[in-house]
Amino acid sequence: MRVFCYFLLFIILCVGKLKAADTVYVRETQIPILIERQDNVLFYLRLDARESRKLTEVSLNISSQNLSEIESVKLYYGGTEALQDRAKNRFAPVSYVSGFNVGQTLAANPSYSILCAEVKRPAGRITLQCDYDLFDGINFFWISLQMKPGASLQTKIQADLSCVKLDGRNAPVKIVSTSDIVHRVGVGVRHAGDDGAAAYRIPGLVTTNEGTLLAVYDIRYNNSVDLQEHIDIGLSRSVDGGRTWEKMRVPLAFKNVGGLPAAQNGAGDPCILFDTKTHTAWIAALWTHGCGNQRAWWSSHQGMTPEETGQLVLTRSNDDGKTWSEPINVTAQVKDSSWYLLLQGPGRGITMDDGTLVFPIQFIDSTRVPNAGVMYSKNQGSTWEIHNLARTNTTEAQVVEVEPGVLMLNMRDNRGGSRAVATTSDLGKTWVEHPSSRKALREPVCMASLLRIPAADNVLNKDLLVFSNPDTTKGRHHITIKVSLDGGNTWPPEYQLMLDEDKGWGYSCLTLIDRETIGILYESSVAHMTFQAIKLKDLIRE
View (tube, rainbow, N blue to C red):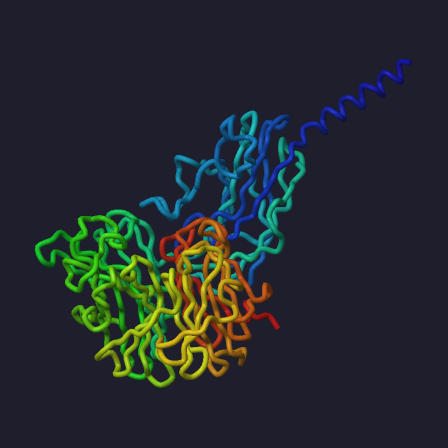
C-alpha cells in the first residue's frame, strides 16, 4: 500500500510539472522590412499565462542570401490585454511601430514596448534569452529585425520561430500564420513628419531614359486630407535603382496666389509622364484656388476660371527631373465648362509608340457623375485634347498601350468590388469594354497601377501586364502585384506577390527599373511612401 502511495505521489508531481506548459501563439508578419527602421516587426507572440511565471527564452532560425546585412534581432514585451478584449485573440494591443504618427515611424515606441533581449549580427540560429515576469492572463511579446544601412533591396529573409521556453521549459508553440513567408526589404522614401509635413500621399513613379527614378506625391503639410488644403507636389529622385533618394524637390507650389492663403492654393493628386522620345518629364496636377478649405471634389463647380473650378496644370523638366518649369495651365484646352471638375489620373502617364503623350483623366460631368478617360498630345505637349469617357461612374484610372495604337484604361469603379477596363483605338473617341472588366481584378474602390512591359524590354521575353492594388473588396490592405500573360484577360494566382498585409492608404505606382526588375512606390502600413524593387523572376517563376 505504501509503495502505491509513493507511486501516486510521483504521478501527481509529474502532472503538476506538465501543467506549466501554456501554449504560445505566434503570428509571422508579411510587411516590408525597411532599411532605415531600427525595428521591423517580424513575429507577434500571444501567451495566456495561467501556469507559467516567466518567459525565459525564444529561439528562431533566420536564413537569407545576405545574412550579414542583418544588424540585430530584438525581443520586446508589449504588455497585457484588457479583460474585455481577451476573446478577440489579438496579437498586439497597439501598433508598436507606427507608420503614420510623426516621430514614431522608425523605432519601437517605448511607451508600448520594453526591450527584453537583443542579438547583434546574428548567425542563422538565434537565441533571445530573458527572464521576464508574466502577468496573469494575456501577455504580448514581439520580435523585431533591424537591417544594416547598406542592405540591398534584393535581400530576402525567411524566419522560423523554433522554440519558446517558459520557466526554463519548452512550451507548446502554435503558428497561426501561413508558412514559407518571404520578408522583402524596402525603403521608406517619405515618412510622416519628413520635412515638416504631416503626411505624404498619392504616389507616381517613372523611369527616365537615363535610368533615373522620378517619384512624385502630395506633400500634405497639415494633415492627411484631400484638397482643399495646404498641399504641394513633391518629387524624389533616385539614380541607383531606388536604394537611395535625393533631397525632396517641390515642382509645383502655388503658395499665396491671388492673395489667398497656401491652404486655399493647394495642388495635388500628381500624375507623372516621361516622354521617351524627347527626354522630357511631365507632371500633371490639380490646382484648386479658394474652396474655403472644403473638399475640392464637392466644392469645385461649373465654369472655367480658378475662382469657379479646379485647374488642370502641368510642369515639365528637360534635365532628368532636376529642375521644373513654371506651371502650365491647360484647363481651357481640355475642360468642358459644364463639368464640375477635371483632373488627372493620378499615378503615371505614357508615351505611345508613335510619340503621342497620354495622361489618364477623370471628370465630374454636368450631372455630378464622375467619369474616366484620357488626355493626349500629338505635339510633345504643346497642346492637349480630350474626347469621350470610357465608362461612367469611374474615377482614378491608369493607361497602357497594349498594342500599337490601342490603349487600355483600367479604372477605379464606384460600384465597388472590381476594376472597370476598356480599350480604345482612336484616343478615346470610342471605347470597347474589355472582357476582364468588372470580373478579373477585385478592389475596395481605390487607386491602382497598371504597367505594360513588352517582351523585348524584359528578361522573360514575354509580353507582360503588371498590376498593383489592395487585393481585397473591403479595406485597404494586402497590397499585391499581379501579372497577366494574356493581355489582362486572366491574372493567375501563381503570378501574384503580396507585399504588405496590413492597413494603409493603399495607392501604388509601378515602373520598370531595368530588364530584370520592377519598382513599386506605394502607401504602405510602415511608411507613407514605401519603395520596393522586385525581380520579374520572383513574379513569373519558370
